[in-house]
Image (cartoon, rainbow, N blue to C red; front, side, top):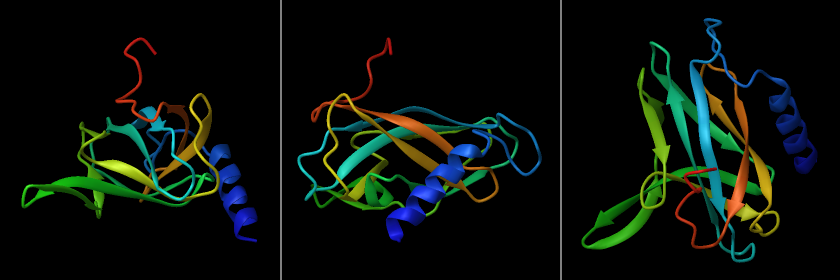
Amino acid sequence: MRAFLSSFLLTFSVLLPATGNAQDEPGTVRVEQPWARASIGTARPAAAYLTVINEGEDPVRIVGFETPVAEQTEPHRTVAENGMMRMQAAGALEVPAGERMVFEPGGLHLMLMDLAEPLEEGESFPLSVRFAVDAPITVTVPILGVGAQGPEADE
């Protein structure tokens, strides 16, 4: 039942407009340059990265992320504490008007936990970004190599 519900929600979100908001100003929020690293099996979490761009005049609050490849998809930050690097939940995410929020290695990123199957280099998966007011945006996330640092500049 849970798999059916996830599939239904993902399918429904794909049918919604790719951008837009409650004020009917399409194109004010965009998601660009999504990518993920290949995983080592399913026992360990994987990571995904992207950029959320807010071209509107009001802040945009991100309320969640969904993908069928992981049971949980949560934003985390890499932080230094007592000389050690660790990850912590990012909490509430808000993209100020006219700004962008970059999810990248060593900083803000998405943890893909409880993977349904390994993420294989060369494949891709859908990822939906949900907003408090704006319609969800679903993007296709290409899977790069285990040690990738980002998509190639010419892609």
